Length: 262
Ligand code: DAK
Image (cartoon, rainbow, N blue to C red; front, side, top):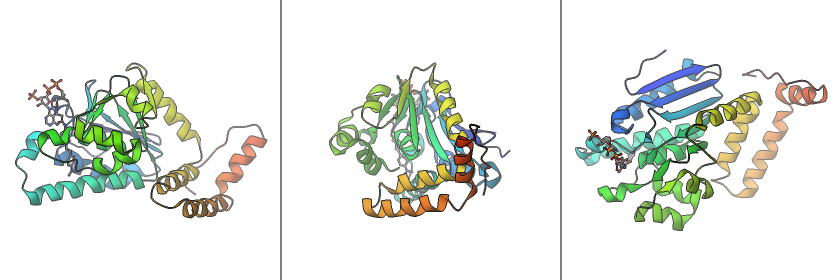
């Protein structure tokens, strides 16, 4: 398995866990972290037949407390543009990936940490998680998609309160407002994520990947176009083996056995 300096990676069956491992700086995102996350996605032997990728932060205090402030202080505009390109392409790759990405958030998810969580398909948080976008206090604007994704998730007025007014959301508030799909106690966080992962892995791989693709594209296109794409993809289900297996298993009262690639 490839070695990373800022990440811990683990692969068990169809499930990968990628942990940002800089607990002394609350897992702040340096350029190296973002480059290494790209390398994880580039590593085809690691991502082959992957069903779920869990993104987490090391330690109990923080998911990610933002971009690395010390490293950003010396950036030139040219380097900042490169950093932006690297970060934004990482979010787009996570969103376009055929596997489901889950952000497991305990503690701080600030700035780039909140943005990284929003790049994931599902965000599960502990009650004491804290989401926020404090970039303007540092004389910056969010550069990792925060100005674009937060309003899409929670609506413009609240997004602007978070982005410009310093409002922080705990896990429960983040759930009520649609940023997080489930909140748990700190003790129950792992168990909840594991159960969710188990359910995703039980379902048909191609159907899950296709459902993710269609649901994600619903954010970008008119309803009629999305419905047309859904109908066409629904028809395609009947050309493959997954639907035959899933429907037969139900009728034969047995668990379905899906293979990872068709
Ligand atoms: N960067 C670097 N170090 C950080 C850090 C960060 N974001 N956050 C915390 N640390 C370090 C602290 O400096 C401290 O280091 P030592 O003093 O021990 O050497 C250590 O982590 C522990 O932090 P504290 O002592 O401050 O711990 P507290 O519990 O007292 O406070 C805190 C926790 C999270 C409230 C506080 O550390 C804090 O306010 N941190 C900064 C949070 C923040 O402002 N985050 C937003 C950063 S700006 C982009 C991608 C991303 C971004 C932009 C562009 N592109 C791809 C273009 C994002 C920008 C940001 O995220």
